Length: 154
Image (cartoon, rainbow, N blue to C red; front, side, top):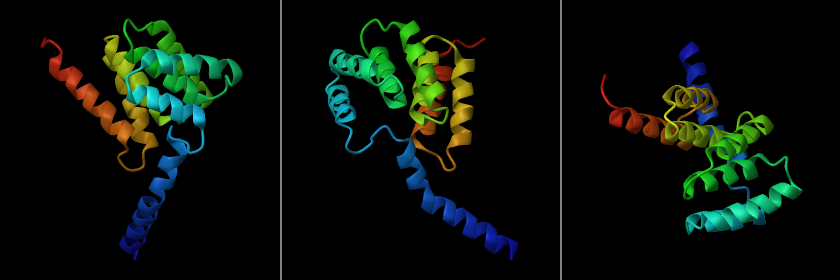
C-alpha cells in the first residue's frame, strides 16, 4: 500500500508541475512590457530591452520579472556593468526569493565573474525549487559544467 501511495503522490506532483512552472515563468500572458522586451531580446537588441525596462522600473519598481530581465539585457550587452547586473538580479530575488529565472541568470553572472562557488549556491537553490528538473536548473547546471570543463586544472 505504501508503494501505491508514493506512486500517486509522484503522479500528482508531476501533473501539477506545469502549473507551478507557469507561476514562476517570466512569460506572463497579457503583459505588453514583457512581450515587448522578449521581442527585443529575441532580436538581440539589448539597448531596446534596457530602455523599455528602465522606463517601466521607474513606474513599477516592485516587479521582479522586470528587474530580472533588465539585469539579463545588461549582462548580454556589450561591456556589462556587472555591479548593476548583480544589483537588479538581487532585487528580483528580494522581491521574489523563488524566482527561478533570477536564480539561473544570477548563477550565470557569477560564472562570468569567475565565482563558481556562488553559481553553485544558486544551482542548489534551483534544485530545491524545482520539484522535477526545470529548464532554469538544467541551463545553470550545463553552464556550471561547461565552466568547470574550461577551468584550468590544478
